[in-house]
Image 1 (tube, rainbow over the protein chains, first blue to last red):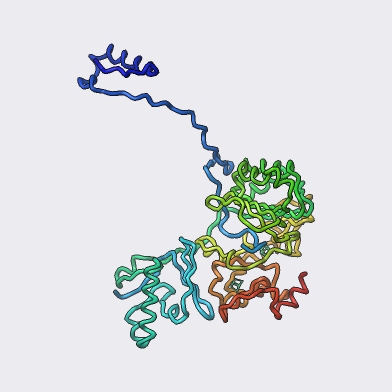
Image 2: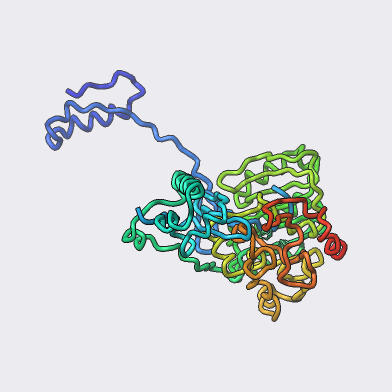
Amino acid sequence: MIRRPETERQKIIDEFLDWLDAHRHNLPVNASTWTFQLVEKRTVAEQELVTLGKYNAQKARSIPFYKPYTKIFKF
Amino acid sequence: MDYLLLYSNCVLVKGANRATICDLQKGDIYPVPKLLADLFQEDRALDLALLKEQVQDETASWLLQLIDTLVASQLAFYCNRQERKRFPALHTEWLFPAHVSHCILDSATGRLDYFTESFIAQLGKLCCNFLQLRFFGTPAITHLEHILRLIKDAQIKSVEILVPWNAAYENAHTYAKWINEYKKISSLICWGAPSTHVVIPGVEAMGYLLYTGEQINTATHCGIINQGLFSTNITTYTESLHFNSCLNRKISIDVQGNIKNCPSMTDSFGHITDTSLSEALNKPGFKRYWHITKDQIAVCKDCEFRHVCTDCRAYLEDPEDACSKPLKCGYDPYTGEWEEWSQHPMKQKAIAYYF
Ligand code: SF4
Ligand code: SF4
């Protein structure tokens, strides 16, 4: 038997392990040594992209000009 | 080793009194004595055997020490005759994929009523990517936000904005909100502020919020030349070899709505209410300053900073001479000294002429 995680919150893993049990004949022989971790996918807000022009160019950051626009005050 | 060779991105610029090696990749400028600069062949390679032949004892060892410093600063490297051929010089062609690279819009009242979708389309047609808005009067929040929203979806890549500092805007965190919300702002400069400081340091030259105590209430403030405004990169360097480093590919609209090359110049090529930007651009005379390079300008042609210094043709030491030195430069390349330009006795006539 594959060792079941003790925490109940791993219901999803249990479901998966049941499926493994049911499909043993199709799995590698070392399947009983597998351990599982539940990795939760957090909903990360997509990074806001800057639209640069009519060709749908999008970048994380815009592009500065390569020289002073006008020399209006001392830096 | 036979030679000391400058890396391709490190260019030697000779002046009357000394020279500079500009590292166009790292953005650094290193002054070097003229004696050393004159020993370079094709401004790139220094024959070490020839140096020892031409220069005597103490001077030679001083120069060799200097050369070691150049190597340690990653400006140059030692190589032999065969290796030298494998390191070609930097290609100096300047290509920019736009009819106009940048545009300045001035407003005395805080309003730019012609800034509509069709105006943005005109800028798009010219492939203009960089914009500067100079407000000499306070823009209403809704008006500036409307402009910024239009810019957001346009071809514009970055915008620099000058506005009068306003206590109510500051208290409502309006400036910081603009910086956070409109990612195309390269810098927002609030003039007439109680103090001069960087409020939000940008990231990679975008998103700066700066306060300055200076009163920038007319276009006549433009044209300042100082070391802080030097721009040490390949694009500026190659552009300055072939074109005017301020006015090339520039279009502007002054406070009256006149379309010009620079807002401080007198020549107008039509009014924004009845002339399109491309019509104005194609009128004879619009591009008259575009080909005046630093190598043609009096005094600048002898200056070791000429290819990192951006020019000014609107305020000149001699207003009658289109190739005169910029009025607002206090540098003397013959002595290597900087002084306050406005105090210079030779400039008083020109100051009286312009202001
Ligand atoms: S020519 Fe002079 S005044 Fe005109 S934009 Fe350039 S620096 Fe400013
Ligand atoms: S002399 Fe000319 S090139 Fe040199 S710093 Fe002044 S304006 Fe720039």
